Amino acid sequence: MSLRNLLRESSEAESEFLDSEHEDTEIPRRIAVPPRGAVLTMRDVRAVRDGRVSLVVVEPQDYTTTVKLTARSARLRDFYPMGPTAGPQTRPRASTVQKAQTGQKKGDRDSVNERTGLRKGQGPACTGTGCDRWWIVNPVLVEWLKARTRWFRE
Image (tube, rainbow, N blue to C red; front, side):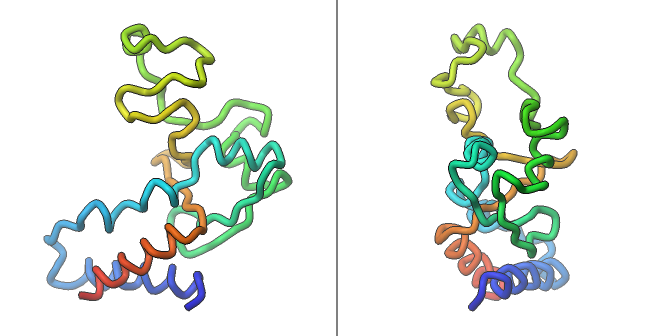
């Protein structure tokens, strides 16, 4: 099955499930949220911007469209609203008090965010006002989509 068909089938299965008598059923996190290995991070975006890699990703909102991100992609502007040399669009930073408590220093790449457990730059790359996450097309994503579709169909 092609990736496009798998994305469409997963979306349709979810819609049918939500429209059915199961609307009050809680969807498990493992089904509702893609695994960390399938989510585009700002570190990935910087690697694309710097020309070290190109990635095939699934665009947010309907999650049925794939696009190849390269250093020349206009889509990079989604992550850098003021142009590729501007800072990334990220979630609001921790307060100064939290930074002081965790010992983080400005520009400290090895610091770990106490709340998320992620190193700086490892958080999800997101766009839009709702911080829509992008998915990387890889075997982890494909397996998750298959499992997700099976869960909604059962």
